[in-house]
Length: 355
Image (cartoon, rainbow, N blue to C red; front, side, top):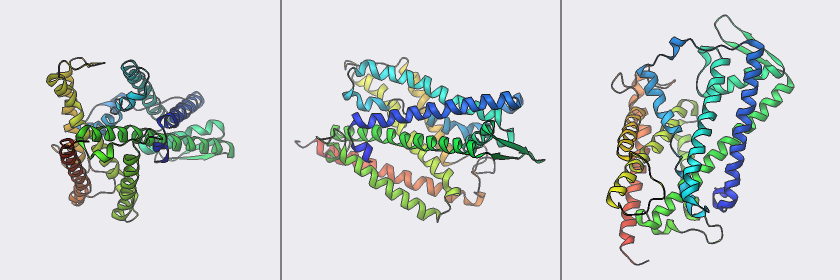
């Protein structure tokens, strides 16, 4: 929150540091994968392993879609750009290419290094890092059941710690970038009449939405405390639920964002548009349809093919706990929605009175 409060001129360098940490982390990881492959040979899942299934589609579609939203966030700082009409589209194009590469390289590395049985999502990256570090010193011992034991030397362990620091920097700066963009968007919305006018105030000293920044810090702290209370310390079991909640809240916001451009273009056809999306009607229908599908599957995993059956539910959850899972997801979503409606009602009332 401190970095978010500081001026955008300062905060952007933190985000830039995160970008450099990404390239350093994934560049080093790619080099280790290449060295490991040369030493031990490359392998990967068979072609048959890539055949699509509805279960795999349901599990992956929300996460994939989550990784593809947010490219519009730089427009929230358009007033601080020298030429927003040029810089925003250019930045989006560059981000799409860079993100594609940064997602593809780790996935490819995991697939060609780890046995198929170990190529999972979250754990797969750290396991692949550990295994490829043996290029710098260490050994890999395979058991009869397909599991592997990795032994590292002090030097390769030190490199692993350095990569762990890079992971932490990437995670921190990713959260900071999201907060900077979303807080500015909320503040602009509030002084534009979609929320309490008081939250639309920007600090004269820093040029940042100080009140919204502080509100974000308070809410995140309350959520953190509530999460520890609800899970009774069993964070592992609820991690997937919280991740799904984070994905769903982000995706649900696009139920309003995607149609907005189409509606505004039709309602205000003469308004100046520095940049325009082609075939916006078709894009809006397709994009919104994906958001609806993913939101339903996050709340009701497997709906249509076996809601919360073993194929679709997260590890550690039983079929009898499906209502608990839904409760943990749905209650925060309803609370957030109610808060948004309250903000809108206050903003609409205040916009009818003189500033």
